[in-house]
Length: 180
Picture 1 (cartoon, rainbow, N blue to C red):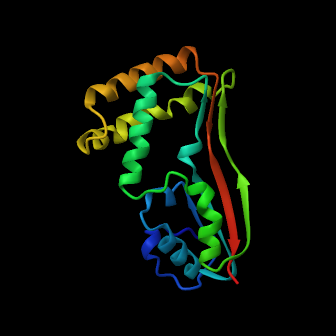
Picture 2: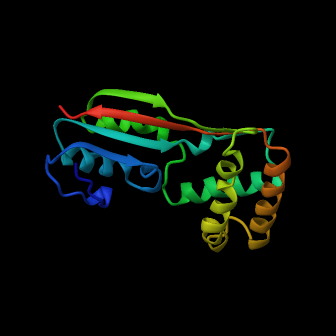
């Protein structure tokens, strides 16, 4: 077995792999169809593409998060859209694979669900303060929110997640297709 790491839009491995995969990746690419096409070219005939990704537009929290975090999340989605990153990537994957000429396409729900009481609940729900920390500056610099709004979102989410959050569902799909 061999793993190769490369930019999905510039793969140059003609028909070399049994399986070509991308996880949580296409959502960050402005031209996902090009990436899928290159992934297909890297797979051998009868090889498989396996793609796992989010649908950020369908993520859910119960109960609803505080207004400060909701404001951040709307800004996050708008920032992604402004960068031509697809907030609904998971649900568009089957069409992308079909358009690239793949066959036997299957889509499987792979939602990441964290429920209070599970041993890793705190760790899994700590994702959003990390996202705010990691990309918040870019959102503020691009004018989608202010630094003070980021701080308020981080603090309100952290307090809410520790005391009130019951369930977080991050919408994901795994989509597979076979190269003819």
